[in-house]
Length: 100
Image (cartoon, rainbow, N blue to C red; front, side, top):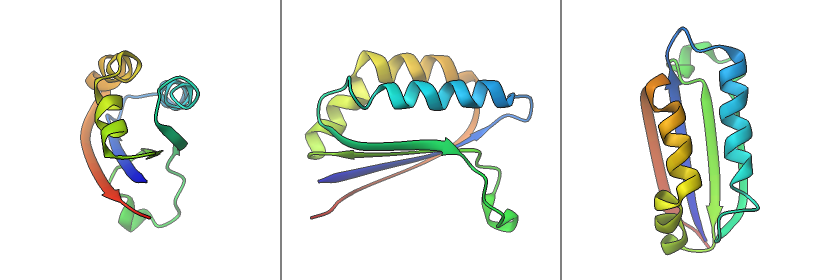
């Protein structure tokens, strides 16, 4: 198995509707892109404000293997989401790791 975690820092003018739309698009990946075992996405509601560092959206995707993650990165649905939210993003953190 292979975990892919993405944290997005969106601009201050990004509305809650735009954030919810991005989450909705991420969830569409689950039943469409091959190799996805599990997926969760959401808006950061942490009460630990001193640790949020401005990151407003999180996406976690579990893949069957590393190659499935590589294929996902190039998949047209993923690329479409990047095109849509790319201009709204001020910062991004990505973490990938294999696990048993």
